[in-house]
Length: 223
Image (cartoon, rainbow, N blue to C red; front, top):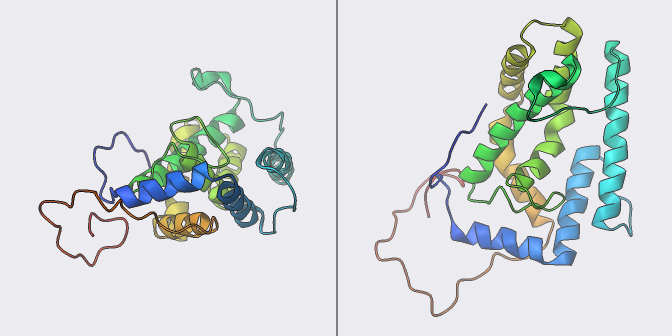
């Protein structure tokens, strides 16, 4: 539910980092990745001939509409996404529940990003933040997992909203087998950029002691 620190994660691999960076730095590939994230999130193709900035604006409008619909379904007042990361009590109950739910999803997603050997900071739609890629991936799943939970818990008006949200999110993650889905989802998103994994330079120094072959997937330290 929360990721406090990471040294060298299980899937630490330079080829994945180089591949991610290559996609981020290629404008055409980056746009393809963003379009793929859009289609997965909203279950329809992204509008054609739109820049990343334009897609970001379209996404924001749709997300605001989704919040309004959920508020109406749950009989809650909605005045927008308003919160202060430095002052938990400043937000209303619903915004506190949403923040707690997002934190749960981001923690699980960051663990998966690191386990797969990617960099949390190298995002496509988001950029310039330590968890940009985490937000990219988590947002695809947010309204299918944790946001409905936040609204449901807020409707119950609990005394400890953050605790209740964590418990409910944990159950949603278990039911949806979220950890099994995250790494394949990342691979699907990045493959939309249609670039090959970069090859190591011919003059690079080979490793002194090779690692044994492993039956593990990308979430394990292996060749």
